[in-house]
Image 1 (cartoon, rainbow, N blue to C red):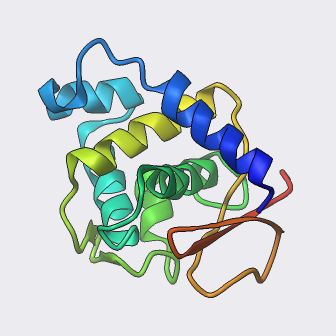
Image 2 (image 1 turned 60 degrees about the horizontal axis):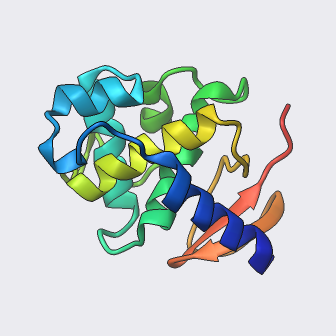
Length: 156
């Protein structure tokens, strides 16, 4: 991964994004969902999947990129156009069973979702649509973060 891009992403996400009026730990789930512009149900679902897909040990940057992948898919015409449909898409998220994540969300994954939404609203790159722990099969390499490879995809 280009170290300059990685440093820019980490610095931008870490320093300029999350401008909540109060710490996330003091917010209700309704406030968190509202800050992300989602229904409570969608927010809980995406945050739970971020937690599960991060193997519960990934850094905030890794979790943000996982959340950004899901958000970018919702906005990309090649994928379904809702969080629930993207997360339930067959063969895509191994941590989703019968319409639910196999792991509960945490404050850390909630924060990652909120930051990913804000990053995306600011027009931030990269345009990640996939991630895996195997390697690059498609797209231009973006980076390996916490055991997950994130390729950059061209917009359709």
